[in-house]
Image 1 (tube, rainbow over the protein chains, first blue to last red):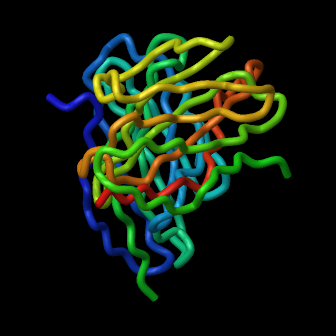
Image 2 (image 1 turned 30 degrees about the vertical axis):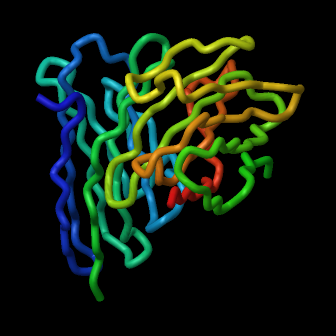
Length: 110
Length: 115
């Protein structure tokens, strides 16, 4: 089983739609969880950290389920500018070991 | 806004040659990282560095790789004898020690092409 697993997509959604991505991780000792976005041929950029209590930032909501070892990202009211690859990131050992998922590609269409 | 910078943006080298990729992390950051991303594949962790020593490295980071912080600002990745399969985008990242969110700031990357 891969350390961090994501559905590669692509997810093609119309503007205004709600879309959700999941990510599963295999190491139960994982400590911190994040969603990054990566535009084509650019560096990853932090979208949001993911907490057990769940957290929301505008149109984005992230959830963590430690028992089932998955995290999720919900994007409401999709914009064209949300088109990107969304990377699930999991860390261990005090954030010194970092594992990226393969990413889920989102294409928002007009 | 402070940012991580990397040079060069693109490096072409011949197989067997040594390359040094350079990064200037954000000035008050204390944790530094190198990642690589082969075209079309996922971002892969190579190494983390803190307090002038490697704190964690992946299985990719073998004897042909080394990192150094030669002065107070630069953080370098050296690949001793490049192979074709080393062709990838290499990202440097840094993190502030006290960051509650553990946010890493990534540089724009160096595209390494080994011919």
